[in-house]
Length: 200
Ligand SMILES: [Fe+2]
Image 1 (cartoon, protein in one colour):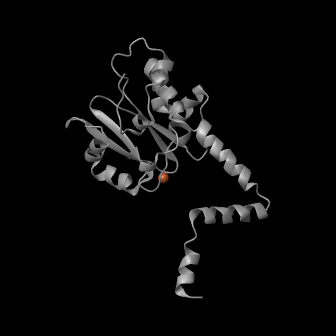
Image 2 (cartoon, rainbow, N blue to C red):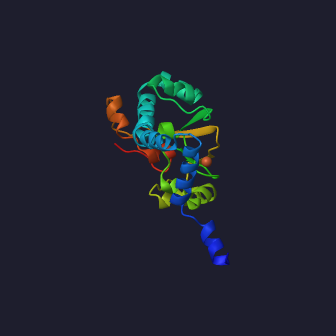
Image 3 (tube, rainbow, N blue to C red):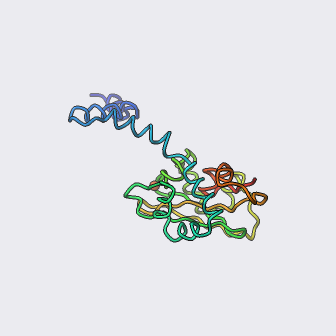
């Protein structure tokens, strides 16, 4: 075998590798194709930011829920029929205020509380974001369109496998008397990651 052959062999495309793994699993009697389809369905239909948006809206209108959410996020979201996978042992909810902006990242890979705030966007998984948001958060946020006053404290939280985060954004001014549903429609995935603030 030549060196070139060897290189080609070692650099099979992602698709080829996925196909090979899937074929190996099928050969062992696992229903890999069905599992992949089920995961794709869940990712598109169930793991969506709309879940977290409902949680945020409820926290804005219901002080009791807000308190329970901040004390134990994992337990509180079950009140809305939401759940986290077993291995997400903690859902820590980070409350923003006029002087505090919380931002989440995963410096190791791409962990999020995906059943609540949705699957992570590509930029969240990018090495650039993961490394820079920790070192120069204010600059990164500005580049992403969030230009915070100098006296706003930025707190960056690094996700681990068993501790997941979501940001509880501030309720926008001018939304007094809005229904939970109207409020939920304002809440974006980026605001729950902490790279955006909300406006009505
Ligand atoms: Fe991760």
